[in-house]
Amino acid sequence: MSSSLSNNRTAVNIAPDYAALCAPIAARIADLARAKPDCVLGLATGSSPLGVYNLLARHHAESSLDFSRVTCFNLDEYYPMAWDSPHSYHEFMRENLFSRINCGHWHVPDGASRSAEVIAESCRAYEDSIRAAGGIDLQLLGIGRSGHIGFNEPGSAVDSRTRLVALHPITREDAAPSFSGLSNVPTEAITMGIGTILEAREIILMAHGPSKAQIIAAALEGPVTDQMPASLLRGHKAVTWYLDAGAAEGLTK
Ligand code: F6R
Image (spheres, rainbow, N blue to C red):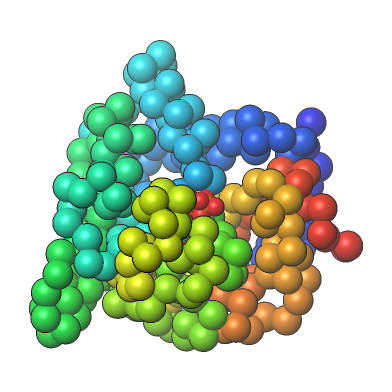
């Protein structure tokens, strides 16, 4: 059982646990891929979507869910980062999703070390590729403890586009275990912008566990401000927040 609250723009679904959180998200993506076989998905890395990716892989294996005409764009990549590094988000996506389904085209921002001009050009090209693919039909997001979506940290403009950004200290701290220590965590990343994300036709933000409760309450019930990037989603016309009981425990309304 999950409960739902919604207003005109923002729907909030609260599930009792992580499995119940992931199932309807995977079902929504599967429905979209069946209804629109050439749909465009925006995807996230991190721990939040792993259960969704497991379910999509299972739908592909057991129900022949076809991704051959689907195009995927990931939100972000660390900088500098070789695409084939075990720490790269490219490798994360290959391992956790794309090696397990038959996705036609998938893209992750290129974190290769280059001059500022070449990075800016490659960020523009990423935006152009999204546009050329027809725009993102459904964007899946997690949320960082800094309030970031993608790697749009506090202060990111509502109309920001794909670009090189500095990571917030909390974001680097949270990444430290997977880099065997804070000093190994990159200080920068390339991320789709808030403006890029808000152009998606539908957005799903997912969060689980009590470590996200405070940031979820601030993003959903605090002021809409670029100091809390996830709060900017409240201006989108089709966004659904999927939370488990732990992530929802700070909500008062
Ligand atoms: C990852 C991304 C980030 C994560 C966020 C939550 O591609 O864009 O915004 O979604 O940091 O990470 P987890 O899910 O590991 O808590």
